[in-house]
Amino acid sequence: MSKIFVKDYLLTQNNFIERCKNLINEKFKNTPTFFVHSYGCQGNVSEGEKIEGILKEIGFLKVNSLNDANLIILNSCAIREKAENKFFSHLGNVLNLKNSSGDKIVGVCGCMVQQNHILKKIKESFPSVNLVFGTHVIDKLPEFLFNILTNSKMQCFNISSEENIVENIPILRTSRIKALVPISYGCNNFCSYCIVPYVKGRERSRDFKIIVNEVKGLVEKGYKEITLLGQNVNSYGKDLNLNNAFLKLLQEINLIKGEFKVRFMTSHPKDFSKELIEGISKCNKVCKHFHLPVQSGCDEILKNMNRKYTKKQYLEIIDYIKFLMPKATFSTDIIVGFPGETYENFKETLELVKKVKFNAIYNFIYSKRIGTKAAEMEDLIKKEEKTKWLEELIKTQNEISYENNKKYVGKIENVFFEDVLNGDENFMVGKTEGNIMVTCKKDEKKIGNFCDVEITKAHRTKLEGKLI
Ligand code: SAH
Ligand code: SF4
Image (tube, rainbow, N blue to C red; front, top):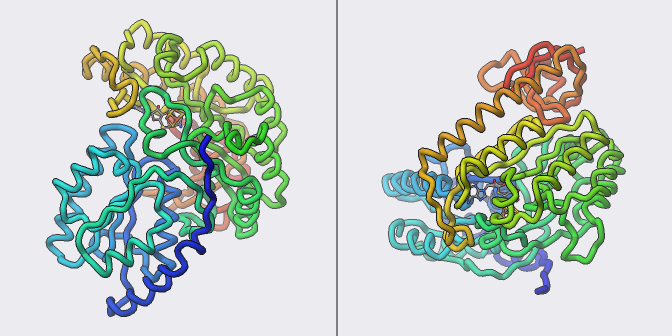
């Protein structure tokens, strides 16, 4: 195993932070502005918050529109072709805006630019991009910006595979009540369809104490929902030679004083031990919502996906969680139309979905990713056929979600209210511990708090309730 270096942002960048600040003062009459857009998973959103934190620190001001921004950064996602197409179409629009207004700096970063063919396409087809930087060098943004501000030609900054952990990067958090806290970066699992291990590198766990202190600090500042992030949170600490470290981390966080809840994602079924389930059942601050991506309900497909568990093992995990935590809720990810999958195989996934009765499913049609094992596999089923399977899965799940939600009517649920309901100022919106959306007549002082709510009506995707 290669050694992971933990670096300190302040030590490596201090010099550039100061030089950038001075240069910005010289170059701009008014405070320069930035707009960062992060595509894809919560991990990317969390990296976007770091990019914003750095920009704020060196003297840029955040704005909410592309038009108003002097600096625009698009933080890309490579997980599926659709995400990549969306990124290129937005990039085209942003560059049109840059060309018509003349003075914008445009940067691109994230998972897509870690791939050589994408980098080539950006250089050839989007030459007016100013800055390209990979997923392992976000911390060097002050240095890159210093270079850009002194030389406006396109500059690419290593898309290297030097994998490390950098602590002390400033973070501009999107919310004042909910916080994302990465506990590990990268992934070692190499599921055969997935690009993540290639673009995010090997799994690197953050220091146990640093994570606990970060959560403590957030709780002291009033954050009420902490989501621990990693591609495979339950293998946290394996690279640090720690045993059962994810459970120990949850237990330590559970001891922190204050009113808050902890969520985590994503867990991998192959590492979801009985001990972890038993431990979680005793942690009152850990939400009993389990996002456990199954991907397929067919053993042959699971094997070809390199998922390292069987349908039976997956169902045993679910059953044990249900046994120890009867109120637990479940969600999952499913890939439809993996190379070689037949309708018979797919029917096994449908059966599993009916058995588990997930609260929500994130479904994806298989997308070929260059460089992965699955990209070499024969894929004979037409897109139209896969779309039909997907529709069948969605229909099945919609009925299950509605049936699940109806069971809450008349019951009392503890809800964390997060915001005013989008589109209706008279209502507020929150989530139950089981991650189900609840709307309620607005009471401004309840936003940002946990409240007991009587559930009065069920819909497929949400519940309605009244405060008690
Ligand atoms: N680390 C997490 C999630 C990673 S990506 C996990 O292992 O569960 C989120 C989801 O995107 C995956 O769970 C998978 O369902 C989907 N996904 C990943 N690669 C894909 C591909 N090539 N085509 C379609 N869906 C994909
Ligand atoms: Fe991708 Fe599998 Fe790693 Fe998840 S566990 S990020 S699906 S390789």
